[in-house]
Image 1 (spheres, rainbow, N blue to C red):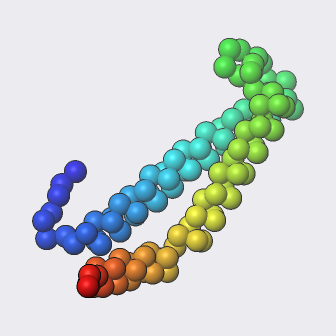
Image 2: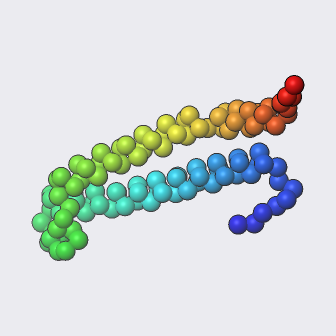
Image 3: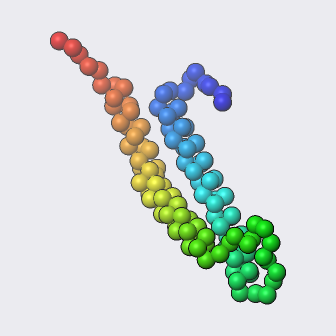
Length: 109
């Protein structure tokens, strides 16, 4: 990672928050892609006459899909809530809070 000495600590912290959001979003998109593939294969396996009963696909059954669906829905809710709570307004409030702490000096008497 490249460090730039001209960046302030506030900008660095905001960059860290943004990079965490991007990683989380990327992970969610990968999970969505895999879930759609698995759901499609499950539907093809259960409702068509295709011979999809070989090694990895033989373990995709109702229980696995119910658990995976619950985890996926939980992950989607987590993404929506985190982007709603930790949206642009939150970042701006956080930056103002950091700036206020920086400008506020403690005087010990």
